[in-house]
Amino acid sequence: MSSRLRCTAARGLTSALKPSRLLATQSAALLFPPTPTPSATSAARTYATAAYGSLSLPADYVSPVKPPTARPGDTRKSQLLRTYTSLIRTTPLVLLFQHNNLTATEWAAVRRELRTALAAVPAPDTELESLASKVKLQVLRTRIFDVALKIVEFYDPSKVAPTTVSTITGKKTQIKLDHDLSKAAWEQVQAATKEDSPLLKNSTYAELAPLLVGPLAALTIPAVSPAHLAAALGVLTPSPPKFPAPSKKKYPGYWDPITQSGLSKLMLVGGRIEDKAFDLEGVKWVAGIENGLDGLRAQVVHMLQSAGMGLTSTLEGTSKSLWLTMESRRSVLDEEQNPKKESEEKNE
Image (cartoon, rainbow, N blue to C red; front, top):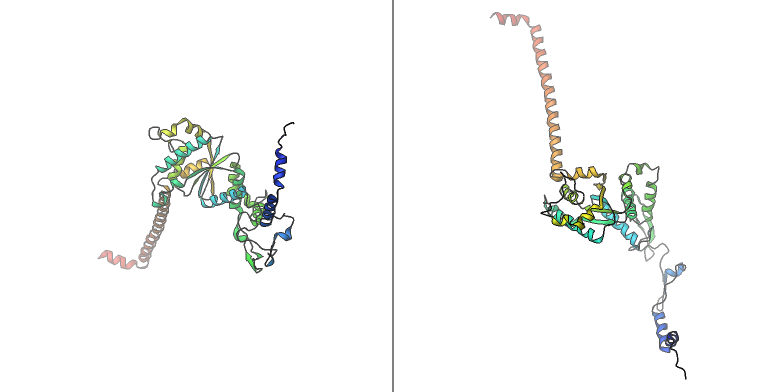
């Protein structure tokens, strides 16, 4: 008698048809019914229960934790867009770098030397003591960052009108759908970024748009500190004598071949400082401010005081010359009116 051939498909079919397996499958279907398809719009808002009948939500109901969006709100791109808009709004100093195929080891070496250089910067006040630990060098998704920059530049949530919706109990209420993924944000950005829009031509985005090309990385500093900016430029784009590279004796890791290879693939193209666009020379000017912002404020105060003193001396000089002129004229008129009295005084 010939031997039988084992068939895995037949064995699986036999086990699936067992009564215990069928009962388990039917029980699971009762406990966890299948998700309704999107075509069943009326059934999507109706929930059946054995004891209480059916409950339905209003047609214009808006969930307070998940408002409607112009883009899919659960995707990674949408969450990354919200991250970029928050970063741009809360970070006053952002430098943009173009990078060219840096490896993970090179990125780690560059960030290590950047942290070391920033940690050595003396903090002028207590507010900047922990600034070095908050400075980040991160790779950007260029197209998503471009959209985020448009939203921050052209979207004004205060112009969004409230919308009337229903609560879960059916009561009417007004809410403002003004988040960054809303339809109102999309419409305002589309209207402001037209080619003939005057708002686009005079904006910071128009100056930064030519830089948003290719692979980008951003250096973000949460405060405008010229000292920390100068230290970062000395590491990432050294240009002596103002921004020299770290010494080989004090920072040997900076001159490591891996670090130098990573730095050679980075190029500073511009920055956004206090909502203004700066080119390479403008960034270096900000970093070269002596004694930081306090020194710049002192220079402004000195300039205003000097201008005030000059204006005061000019006004005083004019009044003095006018007084002398009037006095001389008065003496001349006195002489003309009383010539005899003056002659008698001379004779005596």
